[in-house]
Length: 232
Image (tube, rainbow, N blue to C red):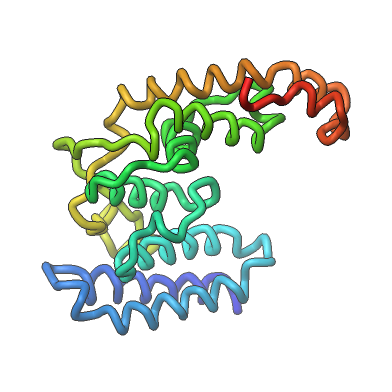
């Protein structure tokens, strides 16, 4: 299929979702069955064209639409199924917002993903070379400081998700209703607390990071094990 025809078909799916099914105050619950059918169609298209560079822009847009439709149609909490280090950033925001809204503690892996991926804090070289060790050290320190995890009170800022349709028949963007969830990007004081834990963990990894910089294959050697002492 020529890429132009693929985009034309995708434009129609976008319009069906955001104008016919979810637009003009319509309730998502009344259209969930058709929305799930469309979601499956987009998944099949993505799978059919994901291996061609010519269709890379389409695959990227399809991934985003799939994630947004999953949020709209899912009745499960995203934090129960997602890997926060691999999930689309929109899903990461939604999962964190769900935890805060429900008064649940934020686990260490979600807190670290929040710090690194959403807040876009640059990790030092030792941390990037020793990512698994960083997660272990961070989890240890995080547990010492926050027990089961941070519990945050929802603030006034509500998470707003905007989708920019590929079709030019829309205005610039459409707002996607993900529920009344807090926007965790506004909790800047909490990021400062996480920064201290990441900095302390990274400092402990400096000797191991230098060793792996000289010899990337030394990770499981006795020297590397001696440098990595999580409880010290």
